[in-house]
Length: 175
Image (tube, rainbow, N blue to C red; front, side):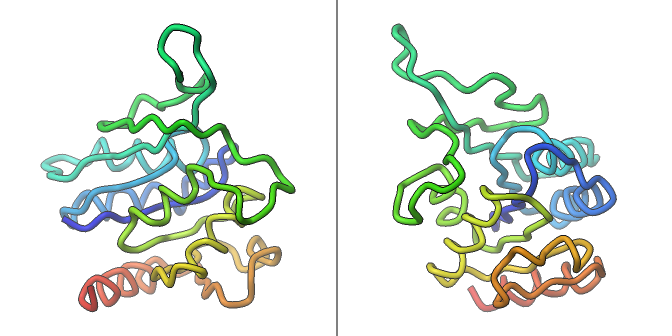
C-alpha cells in the first residue's frame, strides 16, 4: 500500500478539501499519514477512518515533550481519535523561525510519504513543502490558490479534486 501524506493547518480543518481526500485515500486502499493532531490532520483522518471497507491505516507522526517517567509523551491533543497507528517521535513542534536544517517530525512526515497533498497551513506546512521540494517528493497543493501565496512557487496548486486524485495516481505509477 502506498502512503499518502496529507499536510496542512493544525488549526483550521479545511473540511471541504480534507474530508473528500481522506475518504478517497481510504477507498483507494492506501495508508494516510498526517501529523496526528487537529485541523486538517483530524479532518482527513476522520473521513479516512469513517470509510466503510477501508484496508489502509491512518498513521499519525506525533510531536512530544519530555516526560520524567516515559522519556517522551505526546503533546496534549495528540493523537486525534481517528489515528490507527500513532508514532511518537522525540521531536517537539518545530517553532516558527527555526533554521530549515533543524530536524523535526516534519522530516518523518515527508520522508515516509510516497506522495504528498498539501492543504493550506502556516509555518509547519511551509516547512513540509520545503522539505518535500528538497527531497524530491511528488507533491501537490489542494485548496484555494490565494491560500498558497506564502508557499514556494514550485508548489503546483489546484482547487480541483479530480486533478489531485489524478496527480496521486500518476505519481504512484512512477514509484
